Length: 412
Ligand code: ADP
Ligand code: ASP
Ligand code: MG
Image (tube, rainbow, N blue to C red; front, side, top):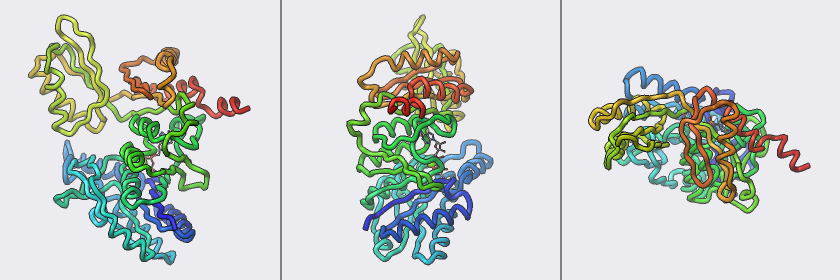
């Protein structure tokens, strides 16, 4: 008997008919002799709706009450699925985060899971019950409800799989697996049979929202095989697992984009020690993550400093930075929320030269200006004007031979 954790995303539970469809899949897995833990998201669009309501009530909705509001969508779906499973003759029990319990830190809005006690769930599984757990939410040491950041149900699922020592974690979504790029913007995108934890981690953190970054961190740390597949078909999915020799041969495995970032530039900052620390400290204290940072060469002891933050933090970050800019006598602060980060990812880049120059040439060929660049061993990221995102993704996807045709030709 295997223990399988199945997570279904928002589209897969978008209405009661779809929840019944999920119930049929769960029944099938259970009747094949497996113990099943199901993790659910809220219905598609529901968390966005809740976030918008919070913004109507408050200019900067953060903290305990924000998490209380945005976590409620999952309570509805788990209740409905448990009802549907019972209707089909199975034993099922729904669990909110605190009923598991899934204990997190108190970083509201992006809490990290600290521990999961699997005892309550194991007791139910051993009694033949299907456990249906709310994704995205946890509880901190003071009994406050917390949420794990957008897309956090993936992390709930993988973390539960680790805590329960599950044999497999299946992530059911609205595409058939992990593709060379987002199949919804590039028809040529090719489904990958397998992808290494490291590459998936890069793809996720660079915007491939098919898996939340932290879920991949958990999978890698605890060596949990994760199968990404569709809840609308029986097609084979993509296995996220340890790197093997075959994977190393691929130079570029995917192109990602992230439109959820904004750029802030602090212009003509006095170039002296401690200035960067002063600018970024208030952001850190406010729990705002800074992504790319570029500082120009200084002229006349003045320099420009540009960085990116998540769109959801943009207004707060702009306000905080403008305050500090006054204190450090910077000339001006400019913000631009209409940017996108387009990235090329591949483990083989470690041993291949020329990927960066090819990337820049391809973008230049389309007249796309690169505003910022950052690189790591296995990725190159460029910030461009948001309106060029799809174009940039498509031309890079083609230039690096990731499309269906190229691969088929190679085989032939
Ligand atoms: P769910 O609601 O099931 O969690 P998400 O919307 O969070 O689904 O993630 C699935 C979406 O991720 C797909 O619909 C697709 O548009 C997007 N996506 C982005 N990059 C990729 C990629 N490389 N492979 C597959 N899907 C991707
Ligand atoms: N419902 C949450 C969100 O929309 C969590 C998730 O879907 O994974 O971000
Ligand atoms: Mg998701």
